[in-house]
Length: 257
Ligand SMILES: Nc1ncnc2c1ncn2[C@@H]1O[C@H](COP(=O)(O)OP(=O)(O)OP(=O)(O)O)[C@@H](O)[C@H]1O
Image (cartoon, rainbow, N blue to C red; front, side, top):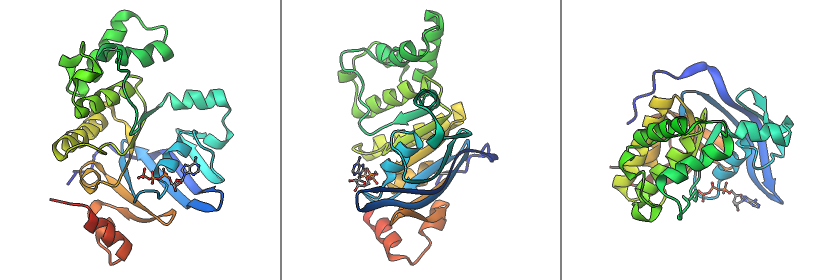
């Protein structure tokens, strides 16, 4: 069980959502979602496949438009931003998507340099080297700097992917299914890394998952998306301390040691 991060700032909401609705044709995916993410907090969004977890983070990042509702991210109303302002806001958000692959033809160093060269053109080589060193150290893979992605394990590739996201120093991290497809030991390493990122960089994170071990070990707070709304929220115990059959079924289908 995770010890709640003592540095969460409840006075500062980095994300605040009210009454969010989103449908695709007749299918109402999100049916009135309210959500707050506090500075320094790891918030886990739990939900079964197809409940709209990815849709939610795409809306937060301005990659999808909502049908209704207020979406405030880092003090800005996402619905009102022009495309250039949205691009600037996105630079403060780090995405770790399920399929965010590394460039196979580039070394680890080149993969990490890539976002810097694209977005921070005025950095010196020394500054770039220092940033690469910092993020590689944070993910515990300093020794892989000259390796090719094909020489790394799946878990290492995932960690380098997270390092590549961190290199732009995002204020918010969005992790979409961070442990999907990983074995249990590697999953634990990724869960620890998510907490390490929170501790070292003081980021605020949303972690989308249906892996209860990941939820239990990374979440300061957990919300459960059921039928298009957040129906349960609190600590891991609070969320599952219920007779609601849908919640129990979710618990039973996961394996918890
Ligand atoms: N661009 C789109 N056009 C039409 N339907 C979509 C689109 N994006 C998502 N959907 C639908 O919305 C629903 C929610 O999708 P979403 O990807 O958010 O699920 P999820 O909770 O993240 O599931 P998983 O855990 O399997 O990734 C699904 O039924 C999906 O088919």
